[in-house]
Structures are given as structure tokens and as C-alpha cells.
Image 1 (cartoon, rainbow, N blue to C red):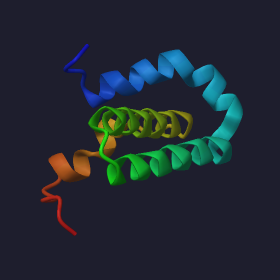
Image 2 (cartoon, rainbow, N blue to C red):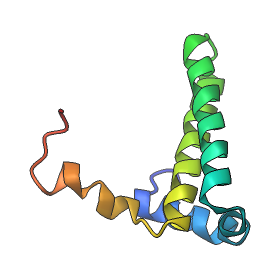
Image 3 (cartoon, helix red, strand yellow):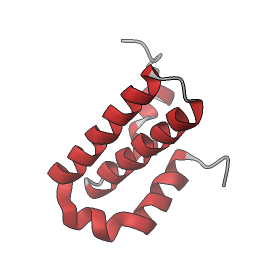
Image 4 (cartoon, one colour):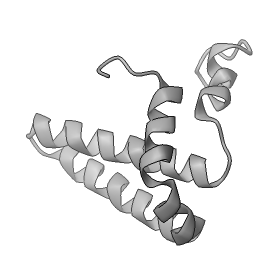
Length: 90
């Protein structure tokens, strides 16, 4: 599972958490996501690479949760960077 695709990870999160996450709804789930972003911010300002890695994982998991409960396929969504010629700069 170490080299999991974005689609596979999103599906893993869906299978494990969708029932609970969908009941919570988007507004409350978004608040959880923002809390994890804040924890990542704190970790980035610190000097604990293990914690920083954990917080990146948490942010990604909550992003997948938000995508799942809103019907967004993240692998398809990132095609704007990988398929449609966008070079990743704004």
C-alpha cells in the first residue's frame, strides 16, 4: 500500500469513513479539515519531521473525505494539472 494512487487512497478513505463522514456533512467536515490544516501549519513551524509527516497525511485524508461527500473524484480533478496542459503555475 506504500505506493498508493490518489484514486486508491480516496477509495480507501471512502470505504472506511463514508458512512460517518456523510452524516456529518460538508460544513462540519470542512471544519475538521481546517483544524488539520492548522495543525500542519504548526508542525511546519516546528522541528519535528515525524509530526509534520503525520499532519500532511491527516490533511490529505480529510481532503479525500470532503471530496467523497461532495462527489468529487480527486484523480479526475487533478487532470487540470496533468492532462489539460496546465503547467502548475498560476
